[in-house]
Amino acid sequence: MAVRLNRKALANARKLIQAGKVERDVRDDWSEHAPSTEQENTFIDKHGFGDFAEWHLGLDGDKSEGTKGSVSFPFGDFSKVHRCAVISLESRAGQYGQDDIRDAARKLLDLMDSD
Image 1 (cartoon, helix red, strand yellow):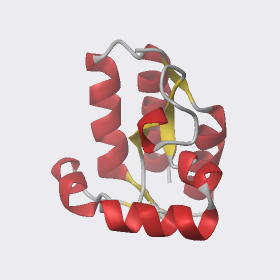
Image 2 (cartoon, rainbow, N blue to C red):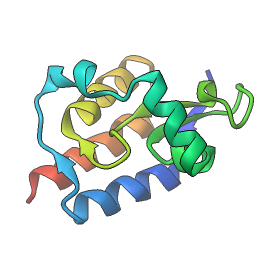
Image 3 (cartoon, helix red, strand yellow):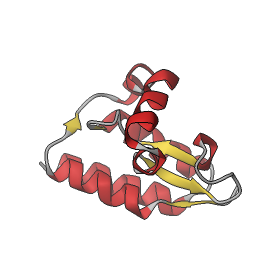
């Protein structure tokens, strides 16, 4: 898996957190709070794939660019960063050996928790 840190998404997440656009939910809430496939498709139709990609900390260079499979590690619902999503992606990134994504997620959590 050739997943690398999506620096544009990281900048987007930081900006949203600094603007207070954070859902301070708990670890296991992400399964309920994650956007549905329909919500993802609606967002892509309205805003384009580039904006969709900026809600994912991972980019997979082995997948076709501009496809949902080319992005991973989502962190929000297209309006707010969800703390539960960042916790979840930090754990998954660590499991998959994606240390740069894991470390970025940890820094996002620290930024959210410093408020």
